[in-house]
Image: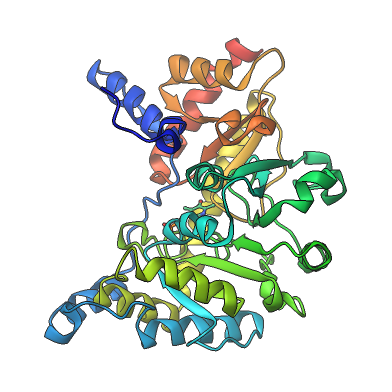
Length: 391
Ligand SMILES: *Cc1c(COP(=O)(O)O)cnc(C)c1O
């Protein structure tokens, strides 16, 4: 018996569900697996944030239905964050909306803006949710290839005219998952100009906005003059503060889009638990040294991993943001073959690039979100056991 709709039936298994199954099988057969596949920070949520959450749960008023649009403290904290970090003014009432994790908002913005048959412009490779949400909304997606020679930026001139005419939304994501690519403000200016010319709203996913290294600071698309007329930006507390389990994020920018999304959401969910929103507001408002400290940890791991890869002849430039490394597979391998070979030879899980879209073929992604000792162990195994494979 098949009870799923055509929409659900066409969705391939969730990428990480497949990988997790394989991992469980190998662990059961006694293999010591190091999972560099999934992007869930191992570093703990900073204590002051957890403490605030516990305090807020003691107030009975916080245990009722939350406000549909998010609590005032959280939305104000997001607006303050934008002013402090980017000099961008946001009206917390109309230009900020709380989300149950940014994934929820990314999935819901698609049916908010498109009708069946409409196109969504999607970076390729990218976070799978953009594509799957489009399929679930009976839309079509157009892959915009991200090529290394273009610094993993889409070439807007390559989008066919017929596609542009039916496009109702474009996703962008920098610092990027899986590419770890970063951009500077001129790229966002160009994107906004393009969006305005063709009247296509942009949803910029800034999940890694604060996970950056050395002197690099990731810009916000909302810094571009006129951006609020056509763009929204998704943000998340998940990666910055190791708060993935809290499920708290936001969308900021164009008020019409935010209003439309909030209509869909108010008929779907009833907002995030108020203590979580208040703890998230506290995270944004308090001392940010935990963020600097965590980024230094990622940077150190990245340096070790890049050195390990170099020893097997895989060279990549150090990323300026995100906790991923995106690298070409050695000559003679497909993504799937290389990933399987690494798993069999070393017990290290990495993600095949084509899992993020067809242009990811020939690449693999490594996540740096495992404890540093385990990462070093993975690097040792790569150095010792992989040389013979690729050499
Ligand atoms: C992790 C991630 C998200 C989702 O984050 P949540 O706020 O935890 O839902 C969104 N986009 C990208 C690119 C991510 O890597």
